[in-house]
Image (tube, rainbow, N blue to C red; front, side, top):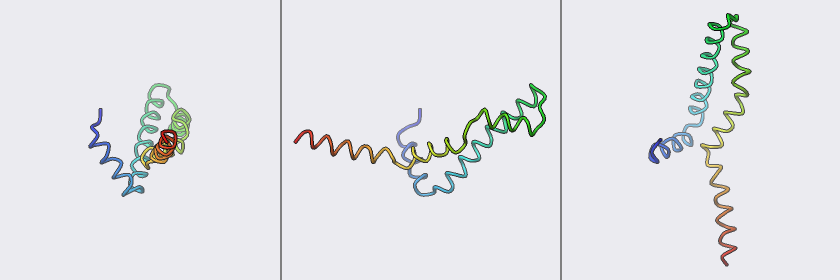
Length: 93
């Protein structure tokens, strides 16, 4: 499990250099799709194009994963936390 310092460093890096973070995510997703395509070519004997197509379908929507990662790293949870705090204070009053 990652330490809280590593997690904070990751958040800080994502806030300061979002373009670099997007490029890293794209590379990571591309790597996983390529590995699955190679496995499909080896085990099922598919052509490279067909293997890549099926690997992309199996992986799912790349944009969905990018959006989820962006939301997680851009402190969208902080907005919800501030709303919860305001409502909590109102209830205590």
